[in-house]
Amino acid sequence: MFRRFLIWIAVFLGSSFYARAQWDVQFSDYASLKAFYNPAVSGTDGLLNVNAAYSMQMVGFEGAPKTMFVGADIPIYFIGPRHGAGVSFMSDEIGMFKTQKFSIQYAYNFKLGKKARLAAGIQASMLTETFDPSDIELGDDSDPAFPTSSTDGSGFDLGAGLYFYHPDYWGGFSVQHILSPTIMLGETNEISISPMYYLMGGCNIKIRNTLLSLQPSFLVQSDFQSWREDITCKLTYDNDGKKFYGGLGYSPNTSFTVLLGGEFHGISLGYSYQIYTTGIGLQNGSHEIVLGYKTNLDLFKKGRNKHKSVRIL
Image (cartoon, rainbow, N blue to C red; front, side, top):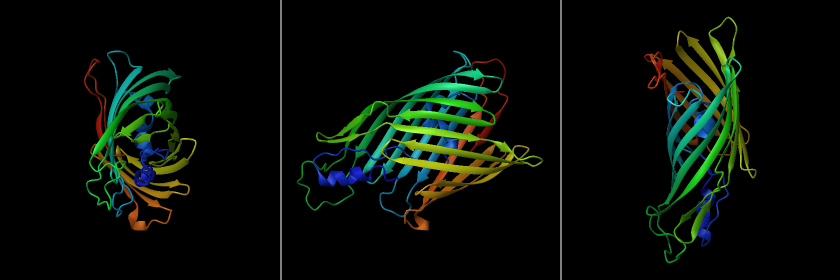
């Protein structure tokens, strides 16, 4: 959430700025958006997956972050069941900055035993950063280092990852910003983005003789200068395809998160609220909604679609 405040301050203090702050967006319900963090996830479950998320962080603060994400992935049956592809778009606004990221993904997976799969994936992205100071008033606008009108820049980037999947447990490791791209804003200002590393994992634990199950998960992310760890656990009630879940999340020295969701007649809705532990008021937390859609899309296989569902996780 503070990933570009350092950039904002540096614009006022110098003729150029160098960003080493955490750049990537953080979602509370990360387990529902695995492909956002790891391109190797694409196509591993044999279904068409469409996901969308919207997050409002630090509600009540002017210029607080707002993030929108839409992504889809699918197995490429006309090449073979071991191939998957994905595409995604993210738009993130904070203060005078707007970041957009368009990505395409490719993954290759193979079986490990009867139920498990291991996949390797790569992602190519185009990043665009826009700086627009038109809504602020400057006491002295004569400094040529400070852009007085909207300016933008772009850069090419790569990501890669490994992903292991089993019906009862999963895990993955990935890296974003392999190329450490530098985005120029005007002639003198630049944003340099450091590689970010992600380690994720989770499992599904069924509670005997009940309709309940537990889904603990974790996410660790770092650029080796700063670290963030998230631990989450959902309790799900599943009765003939009708699901309800509640969950709690914790990020040391950062926040607590409450998650709620349900699925009805193929449509489900999930919501999370993140409460910061850094002195920000209870009412100034973060709201997040995640929508997901899955279907067995037989475009390149014989037979009709056998399964179809809409889910917000």
